[in-house]
Amino acid sequence: MTLFRKSLFVLVLLIVAAGITRAALEGFQAKQEAVLAECRAERKRLGLTDEVLRTKYPTPEISLITPACVPVGGTGELVVKGKFAPGSKFLLQSDHIVIVKESLTATEYRATIKAQAGIGPEVADIQVFSPVSCISAQAQKAAVVTGKFEFDLQASNGWRIKARPVSDTRCNPRGRSEFSYNVEFFRGTETVAFQKREGELTYSPYSQNPFYLRVQEEQFGGDLNARMMALTKKMMDTSLSEAEREKAMTEIGAIQEKMVAQFQDKAVMQKEAQQLEQRKKEFGCTNLDLRLNGSQVQGVMRCGELVGRSIQVNGTMKVGPTS
Image 1: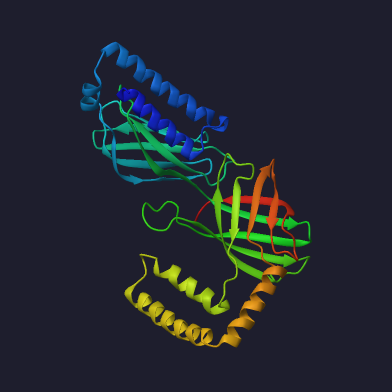
Image 2: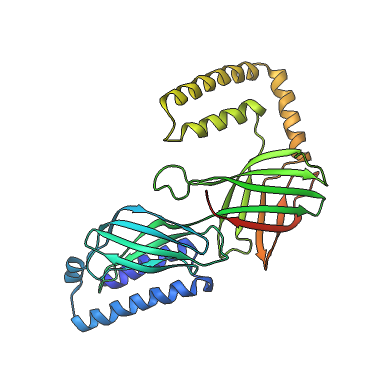
């Protein structure tokens, strides 16, 4: 098998694994085919052997990537460091986020990235192709669409749901990457939420319901476990001072002692398990699958057996700038 065929075979496997072979990415695929066609033409014109191709146009090396944080309808800057042959081509795996300006040296690629208006919090990977050989490399999370995506929803069972973003760490080149939310549930016209949960929003632009809002389920251990999780998450913050870190560790130790004492009492554990199971039946909401239909949000909420496994929801989404 020739070098080109091997490279193309690997490329196809990557595309299939990423789930982007559907017509929904026809813009990206057209650009990709244009790059491959250019490589085929140059290879034929130059008549180079596989060994020469590997030497002169080797596999691109990506050592560090600083993603472009792009507001909806705005621009951001992408920086990719590594080793690149002159004439290497870079493609974003998206039909909604485009490269409007770029520059390349042997060790660095820079680009101005623009996100279309009206899109969701999409994340796009990037592929780089060496010229002539078209040997490629790929990096994840090259561009991240940011914004405050706020949801106000009405469920068919009479509940109202408010989902507000808390933090978005998807632009961080290292560490935890998530779009976290506060999700509140109200009955009818009540102004005080009967349930408040943490959530996480993910977005897949080519799914039937692109917005997936996961709702954190209540865990065994109740408030103590929830506090433990919050403190553990806080400890992951690299900006935390030593004093704050020490305080959090002390509280975690105290919570652990209380939880151990609880778990040693079998009667308490059995009662807690029964109560937790009943609460899951009476609430048990785990996720909302949402899509935009014009200016309206529509979708499905999945909850416990006494609420409903598939409850229709509709409402609005407001997008504001990040602070």
